[in-house]
Amino acid sequence: VLLCFSTVSAFSQPPAKVVVSEVFEKEISKTNKMVGILDFDKQAGLSPEIAGLIEKVSFTEGLQVKKGEVLVRLNSEFIQKNIDIRTKEKEEISIRIKNTEKNLKRFEMLYKEEAASEKAYEDLADSLREHQIRHEMIQVQIDKLHLEVKKSSIRAPFSGIILQKFKNEGEWVSPGMPICSLGSTADLIVNIAVSEDLIRYIHPGSDVFISVDAVGKEFKGTIQRITPVADIATKTFQVKISIPYFQSAIQNMSASVHVPVSDKMKLRMIKRDALVRYQGKDLVYTVKEGKASVLPINIVVYDGEYLGVDNPYITPGMPLV
Image 1 (spheres, rainbow, N blue to C red):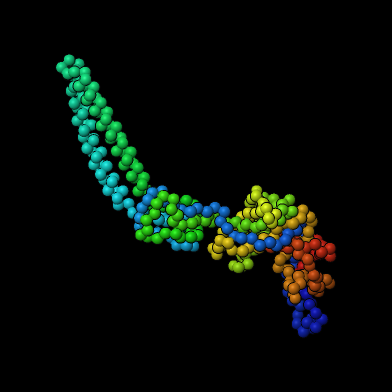
Image 2 (cartoon, one colour):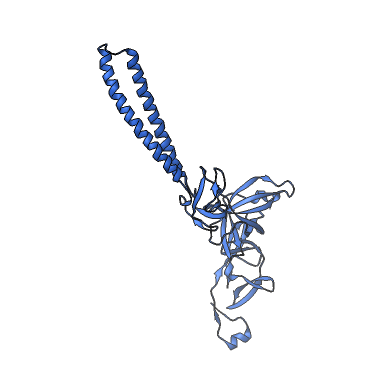
């Protein structure tokens, strides 16, 4: 479309080449802009299951890690020595079992020939059973020590980002003592406090427009759930909105959320690229008789790359620059 933006410019330069799009209608709720906070809905404070000296820390704050990745290794030298001791004990008991089994077979023959007493035969059988139980107990102890070696490597329970680091190499840790805090990158959310009179417009599963102005990011978020406890003083309730993870996401960063404040209604939708801001006013240019004509608009909803307006003179099918 070739447009003449003014009589003067029409004589001084050729018409400008522009792209136009048509206005269309959509059933959508009006929205208000509210400030929310970025957070990780799934977090874990990693701690060891056994006590030990930290030998190696393989992370820093802000590092992204994958599920199963080793983050911390505890020194396991004493455990390995205990495994060696128990293994030798097991070998010793195995020899005793072997010898006792030979003696038991010999006593069984003597007992059948009435050359050995029943008590001597039963005592030897009991001794064999004691050795076998001792052998089993040592094997359980060895299995437990091997499990402790495995638990000496503390792994990420899910893919995420290290939010805080509490311990370093050379420090002693005990079970339950936090080493770091991990936030799931698959569970990034925006928390907003919404007035209770808007709850009827908030529907889990519906999409909302979100912008993180600090880093210039825009997202289509999905309302995840409503926290079932309202603040008794402010009469607001928390709404959790899931958004895709992005590299510069920081816990407690501000985010602007366009929250539904009405039932769905038919609104005229225009491309955000058509919006012109001038002296604090929102404007668009339409095409009339091959020329650009400016119109003020009242934006009532943001919907991704589109804006919803309620001006009656903005009509479906109208071309906008």
